[in-house]
Image (cartoon, rainbow, N blue to C red; front, side, top):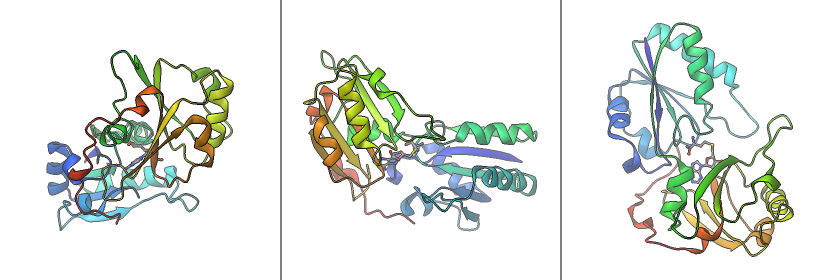
Length: 244
Ligand code: SAH
């Protein structure tokens, strides 16, 4: 009765950690999200029971329901893998799942994954930090949960790169708030859709053009001078790939 919370990376199975691949090959049961690629799922032990608890926007398996399922499975199986996109502790609600499991006395181990927050920009040729251009990087969510949301005007800082996950829907408001906070309207922006997959696309624009841009989720927004760089984008590694 151990639950492994495993990061699946951004999509391309080559970006799984060795530990993640081993756990998938040995799992008795796998509980996974929507944004897990077919290619990654193909590595799951063929005899393992699989639960897709993918939360398509709108129709949701509630987080409470997922927590209950994990607790129940942990009682029935010795070895449960909970597979989450990217890194389990970067906006994956992984922390909540660990709390719920530990509250029931269940042993939990967490396996880090390659997060889309950093791999997305990189695969599009954008370094999130670059000497003389950006001194750091701030990763935030663009979505608002129960009315509480990030104050983007306070994050307007030309020396630090801003990476926004879940920001596609509110991109116009985000850009407006950053400009209001003092960021130049001409600040470069990169939008990386479906990073590491064969559908990867990177759109480049100015901050004041972001609202009108055509973008498909999932995407990572990269805002700052680094988004003007294009350093060795490695799109060619992406294998044929589709979501399950
Ligand atoms: N734990 C995940 C993030 C989950 S939140 C991680 O570490 O990557 C979901 C958001 O992640 C999406 O809205 C999108 O902003 C981003 N995302 C996840 N996979 C992506 C991908 N392959 N390409 C671009 N963005 C991705």
